[in-house]
Length: 628
Image (cartoon, rainbow, N blue to C red):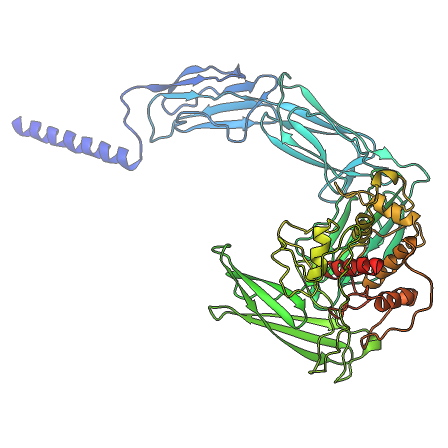
């Protein structure tokens, strides 16, 4: 009996171990109870549609599916999910029907009650972008849409919409719209309407449609037209281009290139007011697009900038700025990027190579105190009528720096002998109004860029002390910068003491004030006095560079209004070799040379743009001529 009991116990023990092993091998858990409890808590904006939020589920059985629906005007964001562990249950969102379904059963290896908390649903709205006549929206595939657009969104979601102006329409000056549902309506420089902002429903109820109204464009008159004028700047090749463009239609693209050795200023900001696009590289600029003026009929004038010297930079960790007094007198200012207040100015060595048939290539080389080498190469085209012959001198335009042309000189080429400069005229001895300084008088100037050895020092001193010309900065006169026609006429008007209040009309069509500088009264004074005649097409060209020969022609006409210039025939002056003069300016240049009005301290060519220092000396000489 005792032996039988031991055998039975051993069998039971083996059977128990077998059950445990089999259960483990089949991943079947051993539970203490019969089931588990599922509890679901709903957030704001949610309603139970079917099933129960609390239910007892037997182990291994499916729970009764629970369907929860979003209330009217509410929905689920992309990252919506329950808080708590599903433990084998399924959580499915149906955005189309606005429902959530929770179903399934616990996994074989899980056990325990389940408590799920559903976050609040978010309110949703429809935003309807309604735009007025003359606007359209363009899709990625190029399809143009002229109908309103409606989108479904939640508060705080950002939206951007861009609208174009249809052919035959334009954006008026007073175009505007108040802020609507967090969206602002603006117009960019290309006459495109932008709607931007983060949606703010305000007092609107969830599920409602919020309408954003975008004002339309205005239609051009049937006889509207645009006359487009594009003028090249100094050191930019090409003639002035004029086009008549139908409002809302594309202009014929126009391309300009810089003179060899120069480039478009990299900091040039074009006038964006007319909706044109400017594809500007270093040496080539193309203007295209659809002109969008603010009025139905308009003349658009675009003045291109002055080309600047093409610079090759040294080491990337340093910057270098070049300054050329003339093609053979070049310095490099090296600024250290880690400390912009630290810099050094280095005199450059300049070499030149003649490139047949009509070019000269200059190379400037500068070395700083750390033995870093910087080079700058540019090429100057010689007019074909001045094809270089070794041993002769020619007129060569100098390079420019930072968008300002340096003064023109006739540097020696291949060691050609310099031409002697005519003696400078004596300074006026009997002061007129305004008074000229005595010849040996050189009052201190505040300008750091006017050295004591500057050939135009007396002229600069005189015009500054007399209030005829100011510096471009409190400590900078910029003697080698150029002047426009409007600037020079303003200088003449100051010399004459013009009362600008007497000249309120305008003979020319292109003389509008530039900010706080209203040069128009001075131009009108000069026009009424016969000092300026304009271009013959009703324009004056106020922003065009004034050349030396244009300036002396105006001075001669001005002298005639003062009774100081007769029309007597003058002997031909002894011009420096190679001097070129336009036929219409020959008499004026001869008058200026014979009467010592034309500054001869340097060999400034009559046809080149007038520099500020040269002009100051010309005014000084002119006053001396008047009182002699």
